[in-house]
Length: 399
Image 1 (cartoon, one colour):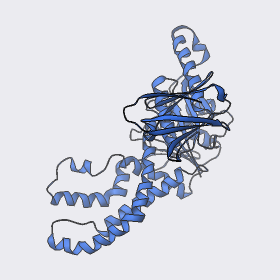
Image 2: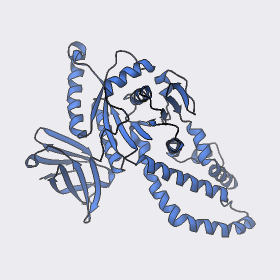
Image 3: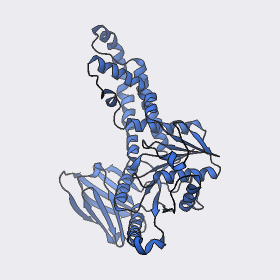
Image 4: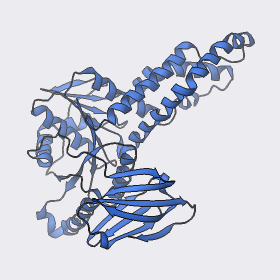
């Protein structure tokens, strides 16, 4: 099965591009399901067809689903939530906000994403297109299974044995309701499910992420930040799709300034995301609603390319610890190392090489650390960072 995850800042047209991709895949004979995990669903509006929490047949080979996060929460957390509610009732902490507090931030998004695992394992579809929550914030939650797995392997078995020993005494004292085996089984099942899902979405042979953005300053900054974290967490980003690009004929009159501004940001997009493929989606002449206009959009984006193909393999940014230092590795093909210059300002690192300029948003693990050296070899720039110094904002390094 092939899984393509679309993400991007809210309002960039992510849902339209995802829906267009699914429509094209279905027209090519692939059994395609487009799945919306965004809490603010707009997939049914894009397809102009009512969609429910279960897959609905839209046309030949095309199904669509808008995940109901409340239903998924009940399925995956209902048993635990019931035990927590009883616990708080006994502690006389029950009020109207209790139910809200029993579902921790980000959990509903994770429960929605579990649908990816279920569909991937079902074998009913050839391609799963995922319209994800804005800016990939949900994807960052997928690093949680690493911690959960460690807890399940190292701590959970001991906790489980202790609870079984203490439970009879707790019943006699009647002061606290310890979790039952059903509650513990539910927690373990959830953690195992998240681990399976992580394994699927991080498999570069199956899954890739496509970033959708507009040629605008704030959107581009958010896309760079998302791209950094996608690389950090090991996701394979295989394309960037620049949406709502004004046509050349808009370069005169009222839209002349907007077209010039877009050209500038298009150049910056190429510099910041190469060697990833940069696909372009034009500003359409009418609203992108309904299958016919989605087919036009898909044709403009992909042309003769197969949308299900893996358009790029590999990570263009890698962060690792080496010899006691943190090291950032950037793929920078076709640059002259003699002209390389690094400028660091806050959480932004700028790489200059003559006419080439790339800006990288540093993740938390590198913030507060200054560049101590750099080396360029085999189309890769290796940048070393020293110890964290809180409060220092700017520094320069040159190689």
